[in-house]
Image (cartoon, rainbow, N blue to C red; front, side, top):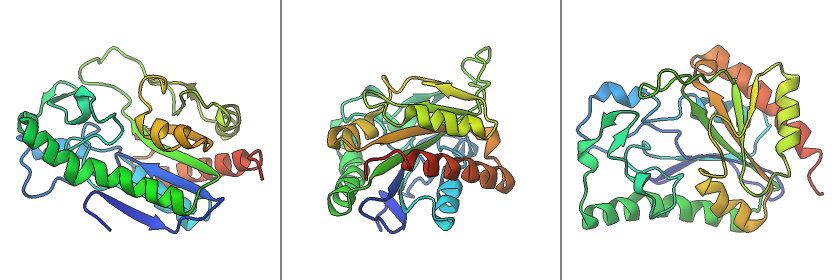
Length: 243
């Protein structure tokens, strides 16, 4: 284990690996973000429901292992390229993050402590037990404080960049569960796909990015239902993977 990541389950060559970049709201005691602590329970700090759904998927055998980010996305956003402006956000959904106004040395320390070990561990796992499929799991807020007029009716979104091998099957399986599914919604994987670009597409590993709407996974019942939906999706998509 590491403060940069945590793993549940056991990676298996030819299995399904789940990656949750934003599954934690943890802020180490020696980092002061300068925000209201209540914001750590909001979408700007964590993808709500991801850790719980990931654990259920592993418990049920639909997924072999999950690698989950160990710190809040407000500490460092691991689903960004290293040079991206939003990697260590100074503003998120209208909220200032004054503790992230770092100089170059502070930025480098944050990357060396969290960002690089997280991605190095994913690389290590994939090299040791190459999965047949990667499931990238996130969640999104039904509405943004900075754009309250924006409507987000989808219950799940499917994201991808250049590799769309699993997309049609994933969408069809989720729609079979009765979900309203967005293709490249609520935002596009063509624009925001850094972790999957690096670990899935660069290694030619089939993958799919799933965004769960947070009000669908806000309690234990919802998390269990969504784990069932994703288990159904994984089973159906895995049948079409090369053997």
